[in-house]
Length: 447
Image (cartoon, rainbow, N blue to C red; front, side, top):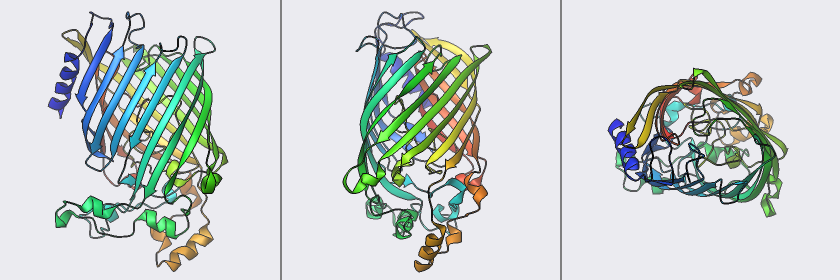
């Protein structure tokens, strides 16, 4: 894997043009195999391109234009087709961001509602356990399409306003066992059983209006306060934002109109040198009005899209080491703290590299639980022959108990903006993953 990473960076270097000694000018072209690893998604293979335009270099290390495209698929049946355009120059005085993404996921994670209120049994998906049911037991199919356009303007030099619109469309259903079993050895085929997603529907926790997905146009607006000295890897400054998102729904989905509030605060503190930085993020997403279908509870709203998808709580974009979408609720609080330490800097030709490490701790907590009628649920599980105690723990303290993980990362950066990220993390509670540790190979810092 290390050889692959270094080779990829050299390939990226070979496609760069108009490089100068310490300031990049003109266009920088990158064409890479899209090779990554996520403990939840498996190995990723495909191709990506990232094109930066720095103009005369007066804004370096910031860019004037960024064009990013990717087509990839993973060994755990998660795909991505994405085009992202981010520009500070198309509309003078404004920042314009456009994103079109299609993310098919045959094995999307679903462990139930409200964090620790939903009992997670790792033996049920561990095929080496005597209690094994299926690797797909905590899965469902979720294919997502997103088109979004966002614009940012200035109130003052540091205070910006933001507005945007788009559409989120979901197609969801049970795991397609027959599709996943094609070409598999008999010993590796998934058994055709009822998964947790199917049980939640039978118990009435997922309604017939949300069982197959839907499309939701949205608009959002808010403000951003930004004093960072750069965006990709700041060594000082604050980035804070607050915004409202209204998601519309029509026809039989009209009950899923909702208004959500997001607020985030990030600070980067230089510890005597830009090579040692304490970085932390605190964020929340709250439902102010309306209701949300279960498959949108895992979506974390953002003003400017830098990643293909943002899971709410659990996984590589929120709580590293904790299984993807482990905590589904109407509102949550999130915190990440990490120490960023640049170990060494060096040049290869005209390209500038550094290697850094980032030990971290992540934590999240439910603050607005999803509604569960315990009496109706008790009756429903009896009627289906299930033992509710195997799936739920209704002790009130469980809902508001924090989910915590920790780990360490390695970063390999080229020209400040192109940052390869390798994070290893482990949950502090086996209810959050079952595995002792998880590994993620991505692009960029988490925040």
